[in-house]
Amino acid sequence: MIRRVLSCCLIPLLVLPALVCAAPDGLAAQQDELHKLRGYLAQVSEQVKRLQADLGEAERRNRLQSRLIDRLEATLKQRAACARQQRQVRQAFFQDLARRLPASPVYRVERDRVVVPADLVFIFSKARLGAEGEARLAGLARGLRAALEALPADLGWRLRIEGHTDPRPLKDTREFPTNWELSAARATAVLRYLRRHGLPGQRLEAVALADTVPRAPGSSRADYRRDRRIELHLEFPGD
Image: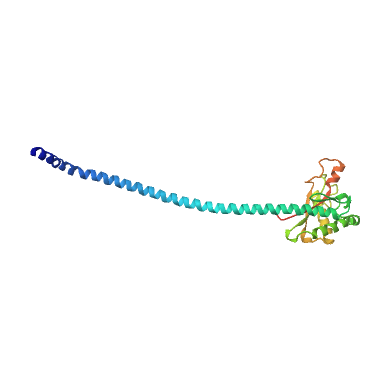
């Protein structure tokens, strides 16, 4: 019995030197593994920091973009409301103008413009209104002045006076080389006439369009007559 106990106690003592001898190599391996783990953890920690920084930057950009989207939506809503108001004012203006003007072949008030046939007020192939043309436009000038005075002043409106011609080249080019010059001179002549009759000059603008916006699609004499015209448009900032 004693011999069996001694043998059990002696076995660990015999094995201990081998374990002691093996421990340094095992410890070095464990330390190397621990060093690798620490390096891996450091890399992971650095990646986490970068991800957190990227996330913070992404959140900052998202906040900026959200504020930008809110501002854009507010701007679009404001512009839509302004455009709606301008359409309503323009429609009401031409309705009011139509009520103020007597029926006449010299002008035609449409939904969004006034059309004046050029042949009824201008000397043929010229940019001069002449006494008869000015007399025919007198009623239109008075109606325009009254209707424009009723507009809200803060809308920044302008009366756009467009000169239009038919597509045929001019025969006598000494005064007007092309239809562009003729349409510009006619629009300017109407502008000056309206200004002399009380319309505010700073609210008027003359535009030459020559034959670029035909009124009639055909090439008959009647079509060309419809193309030769002055158009009056009510414009607002942003149009």
